[in-house]
Length: 306
Image (cartoon, rainbow, N blue to C red):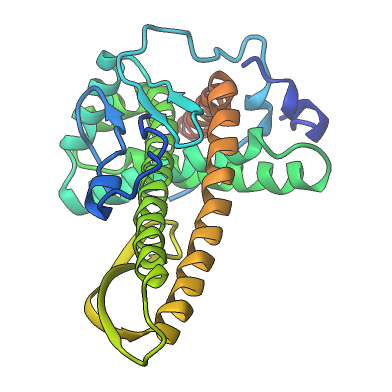
């Protein structure tokens, strides 16, 4: 069967935090500014290799545009608004009904695998040219194989048939899941920046009138940690006694944290905007390659029975 050339990949058809006020606000108030909006329901062994010709257009049955029932919207502190589209409510409900029928542990694995497919399809579309496309295509093929196998596991022949009929919608659900998780991490990182920014403002205000007499003052702040998976954790420091010198050192540390978070936030905004712009291309890429895996496996089984 034919293989997709890397130069064909890019030809596929294809929230709200207000800017900070001048006056210093309490950290809790700043942290609550995010108006990350969600509408819709809350959710959060192999034969052969995927034929990458499934990524081609034409008669490969790309995803048909349908009314979108779920969106995520966030306006960053910079004023840039990002709105992530979602699949139609009935299609999403059908996929989640199949997920609900699985045992909880199995469902968690399948959801993670489908979200991984969404991430791989996103990386494929954003890969650009050259070696990056080849690596992304290989990762997408592997992810499609793994996701298909995970999606079809489960009790009952009827359940497997139903899941087979919904492979394309399952792939789109995976893209949506990945984008929602990405948006959630982006919002949490911006919230963390607000926390740090407020701490900096409070500490700077204290230092303005701090005498050089070796005296200490109590200061409470939240230390931000960016985890390996991109999520944010906090370490609360309550009523820490600081000298003026220690307060100045802490101020430098907090400013360094804010600089690091700003890099993440700027990157998040750019990547989210690109993925929103290429949403149809990403969903088509994911659903077509899953459809191709399904057809390939069915063809092999049919030949074995003949």
